[in-house]
Length: 638
Ligand code: WTA
Image (tube, rainbow, N blue to C red; front, side):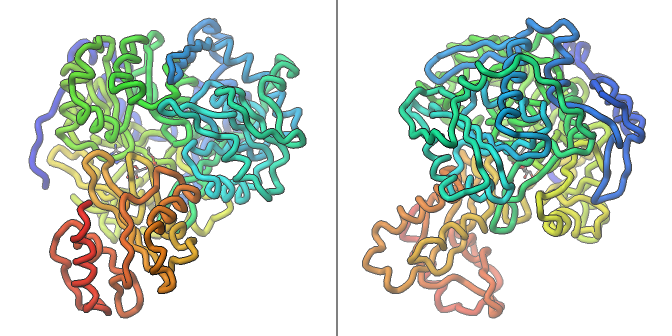
C-alpha cells in the first residue's frame, strides 16, 4: 500500500455547474447496454442500431446494424441546430498568424475537399495518409475522409521517411495529403520533400495533394501531385455523407509495441465516436461557451480524440497552435491562454515539467484567470509537478484531470470526473462510468499491485491490428486467455481504491509522451552497415520522463571510422522512426550481457547505467565482460 497523499476537492461553484456532479452516474454505468444505448441517442443516426452490444471478447461489437457518419455528427448536426456561426477553431501560427473558422466555414471546406478526394477516385474503405503540420487543412482532411468513408492514417509530422514508407506500403495507401512545409522554432519542416523520399519506388500511391502553407519552393511531380487550393476551387459545394455501418473502420493509427514494427490500430465508426463525444463532455466538462486548448498533435491519439473528434462532436470552440511552445520565448503558452481566454487546458507531464524548469517569471506577467480546468495526459505525472501545475497555472482554483487512455482505447478510460472526484496528485482515480478497469495478477485475480486490465467491453475499444490478427490476439488478449484486455501498464490501487500507474511493463518506452518500441530502435540501429547487434533500454529523465540509451556492437572492420558512427546511428533512427526516438547516448561495445541461451540481459545494462548492483548473474554467460562494460559506462556522464 502506498502512503497517503493529500487530496483536493473541486470548489463548490465548479461542482454546481459541472456536466456531471452526481456519483449515481457510476451506478447507472454498471448496466452498460442501457447506459451506452441512452447516451448514443445524442448522436445523429441515419439508422438506429438493432442491438447495443454483443460482448464477445476479443471481438465485441457495438450498435449493431446502426448507420452513422462522423463528419455529419461533427458538422452538419451543429449547423442544423443553428450553430453555423459558432467558432470551431482559433488557429494560431508560430509567427502570430491567425485564422478563425466557424462551423460553417469548416463544413463548406470539408464538403469541397471530400468532393476533391472523390474526384481522385477515393471511395469508402480506401486508405489515405495525412502527414501535415497543425493547420486547419489537416483537420479538414480528416473530416473529409470520414465524410466519404475513406480510412485515414494520420502520420505524426516528426516521422522519418522510412517510417512513412513502411506504413504506406503496409496499408496499401492510395493517396497522401501533405503540405509544402510547416513551422517549428522559426525553421520550415520540409513535409513535401520527406513525402517524396518516402514514396520513392512506392506504387500504390497514385496522388499526392499538397497544401500551400509555408510557401517555400518544393519539388512538384505534375503527374502525381496537385495543389489543395486548386482542387478546392474546382470542387462542388456539397458532398453527401456516406452512411457508415457502426462497425465500419473509421481510421488506422500506427503505434509502437514490443516488436520491431509499429501496429496499425484500427477503430470502429460508431463506438469510437460515442466514446470520445461522451468522455469529452464528462471529463473536460465542456460547455457551449468554453474555449479549449490541447497542445496535442493530430498525429497521436490525443489529437484524434481530444482535438478533432471529441471536441467537434460536442460543437466546442478550441484553439490550435502550429508551432513550438518555446517560440519565440518561454511565455508562448501563457500568451496564447491570455489572448484567447482559454478555459480548459490539456497538455502532457513532459510539457509541465519543462514549464517548471523554465521558471515562473515567464508565467507571472500573464493573466491566466480564464482557466477553470486543467488536464494531463500521456505519462505518469509526478506529485510535485501536479502540485506546481495546480498552484502556479491553476492558482489553486482549477481541478486537474489526470487522464489515462491509449491509442487502443480510443477514448479516455480512467480519469477523475472534475465535478465529483477528490483529486490526488499522481492518481488517475478510477474507471469512468460505463468502463471497468482492474489491477490483476498473472492469474487474473484482483490484487493491489500488478497489471492494469480492462475487464469489460466498451464502445471505443480498438477492433484490431490492421492485417495482423494474430498480433492483436497475442498482444492484448493472451495474458488471461482472451477474457480481459491487457494494457501493458503496471498499476497499484491505493487506500481509497484509486488506480495509480507505475509505467509500462513491456518494451514500450515513453519519451516526452511519445510511444516508442525499443525493438524498433534496435532494428533501425542494426541497419547500419557496421552494426552487428544493438540493445536499447530507457532510464529516467527529469524532463522527458524517460530517455533512450543504446548499446551497439560494431564489426571489427569499423574500428577506424568509429568517430562518426554514433552520429550516423542516430541519423538512422531519425529517418527510420523519427527525431523523437533518437537515443540520448549510444555506447559502442564489444559484447552485450547475455544468458547462456543468448538473451540480452537488459536489467544488467540498466543497473550499470543507474549505478545500482547488477543483481543475480547466475544465468549470465559472459561475466568477464561486465567490468569492461562498467568502465565504458562510467567514463561517460549521461
Ligand atoms: C501511458 C497516449 C500514466 C500509459 C494517450 C499508456 C499514462 C500509454 C497516462 C498509452 C496517465 C497514458 N498516467 N501513464 N495519465 N496516460 N499513459 O497510446 O503507459 O501513446 O499505456 O496514448 O501512455 O500511450 P499512447
